[in-house]
Length: 222
Image (cartoon, rainbow, N blue to C red; front, side, top):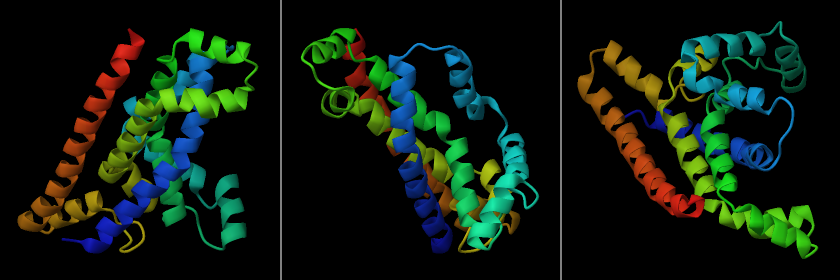
């Protein structure tokens, strides 16, 4: 068992959740409660990581994070290190790759709230920020929790984007999924199988939680 790779994976998973959930709350609520020009295009952009091959997405992210890119130059000037093939770059790439897993469940959670609830709160004179915090977020919590679980589980299992942007640096960018690949390349079936079992257990737990939460949201939509 590669414990260092497991540690990197866990830190990456928690970090991705911390980055994406606040952003997902804002964007998911905006998409669920407002109509505006370009909404369909924005929803399509959010869903791109679901259909784009991970190596293709990783290639574009690697170009965007490169030393010659504006983002890469700015990060290197501030942090003194390259953005690509570093943990901060890996975290940013993971956030992009997991974006639909955070935004879409939260959006569905907010869409499940009856319009009458928002209208009643507005008629009572409740300001939008308080309505959001006191009424909408508690009602949408199954979608929010689903987003947390899916984002974390997807981050732990991501391979293509991680390898393209982070490489395979022990203790910094080598995640459990990459460690499994390394063990298979070294014909260590037992070690690879043990680490694969850990990821399988996480995936099964995530699917179980999302199924239960989906049933909780379902009746509200009806």
